[in-house]
Length: 195
Image 1 (tube, one colour):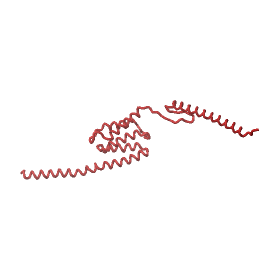
Image 2 (tube, one colour):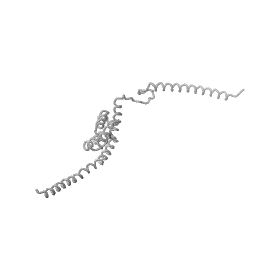
Image 3 (cartoon, helix red, strand yellow):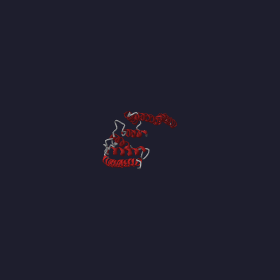
């Protein structure tokens, strides 16, 4: 081939490659731009599920989003919300251990765009709370019933305080009775005519 033909062929080949890249670019951009829209849709459905008590459905939606959009920044949000909903006391399948495992995965995820993701910071705090809940003994605080029984661990101080109040009320009732008796005696004395 002559050098005069090689140069136009190279240019034609380069043009074909560049046009092929240009044609692929629009295919990638709608997917990237549709991720926030898909996330907004999933988030709206998840909110409805959680409000209706369908935590399992919400978890499935979030997991599906994570699987279909693993590189999306919103995938970290999906993992975070899954952990958060695992800690929800109204969730029948609530599990502190599963929440901690999800949070550990989120914390360990390498972040390319920034040194620390805001979700990773949230996950660190939420993980500490979850771990604290898991290791701390549960204390049930109940209000005293009419019989004075209490199921709380703080029943001894309340009993002493209650006993002191009961004694004070009893003393005040006695004083009121004496004052009423004295008042009746004075009324009788005043009502009786002098001779």
